[in-house]
Image (cartoon, rainbow, N blue to C red; front, side):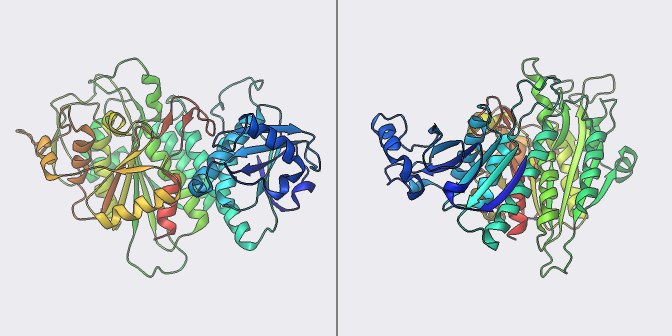
Length: 483
């Protein structure tokens, strides 16, 4: 889809449709004066009152050059923000493209240009890259963001929005790939190609190198698969010498398929376990955006990529592995594999000089029980670091909730035969999983984001297609840019 910022009067914009916001219980905007009677009739009949999610379309509206006029409910102005604008544009795109609209103009009277174009690009995405028939596909071909005055500030925001949305869709497309087409080494190849495209450094540690280093925890998960594992490392270095010694590390879980191993998962919905690498895809998508937006600090991304399979060589419950930092772990459940690969990546990130760490992982079903699909669970060993991450997430409309890490939960990981168990029992599962990770970051400021409930939509939203969401891409980028 082509996206373009234009400076043109509302009534002169040429498009299949032009859309404008209408706020609840507010006067009709001046641009819509020519259809005031129509709008008043809609309000009287309660067909359109300006509430969020409402959309009304008028063909051949008087005084409007576009073929259709779409009015979009924005709700109360006091509650409307960039996230609301992103959703409103996305929902409008998804609705109108099904009605044959190929060129949509959005009237930006007062709002965030970045959020508007993000909404359009994200809303236009469909997870149908493997369908051979194009009959159902009705993509928007052109999105015009029309403003009274396209100032340099608006232009910069618009361009930033395109970068962020494209990065998020890069992540969504990768997450949507089936495991037969996205093996750990294919994921590594895609990371390498992305890095070359945007000017990042990329290094891939293979199985032999990881064995030499002593990544026994990661390799234990990988040993049941015929597909070799990879540790993907992507580096961004600012052109100018940074004014701080801070070095941000982004670590993402990259399990390209998760059967559960010997502790095998139920067959129902196991197909969705292709998305168990959503955290890894998110950090790669963020690096794609970071390379183009150029924050002032160095950022390094690490993605441990493996398959967790059942086979004659697969890890068994009761096996004891030695992690990169030397601690031993008894594997009581092979389906608690994400934490086993993350700890070696977190340890290695510190060896590479990362002074602050954030990881994203579809880690536990327990976080879905606790928070559903609305909030990402956030855990930390450092309140200042958490405040940075939470502020970035809030500004990008990615809902995040602070979860506890009280010392009492650490007791759940005690083990008679090794330093730690890899699970802590039925209760507080998301917390004991986070505590397991915390054991391997020491005093390094760290935040763990459990995205098991937010990385995938089982049903489409009005503003977003069913499937991968690309959650955390915008948060990670904002975190780096605002450091």
